[in-house]
Image (tube, rainbow, N blue to C red):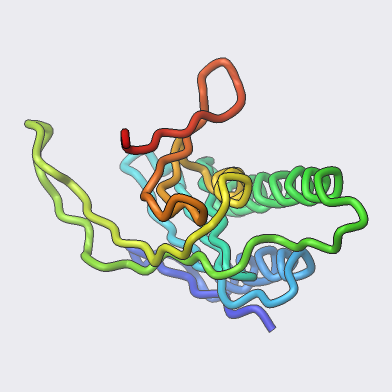
Length: 182
């Protein structure tokens, strides 16, 4: 069973809202072999717009998405639809790449918060620090992990070279990889 954790910064979510979010996010469980938990963070700005951030921890991977809407349930629906579409694309890509080989989604990579985000002004100070567990993986596994997240890059340890490398989304499509010079 998928554990859904709802974090509400402003205390303005009712039990009905939380149940709706849990029900919608619980449907993501069907895409995974071993879904651990889903975290939903809700904030509301001064204009009344709801921002929903969802992070799914399952099968050793992390999937993240966020959406905004003036209606809370619409924002939840949008982020669930976004995550489902991303999972369907990933599944079809895995099937195409590994048809008949029985390879599943990469296991063992999960974000572990190390330090709380630190607020700073915009004068070049580090505003946030995150630490991640990092298992060695192939470039192909890293590209699959990046596709699961809503980020522009992903840092990983290359299983072949044992070097820390960065895979990133290119503006013209596809991915690029940065690695240290020998």
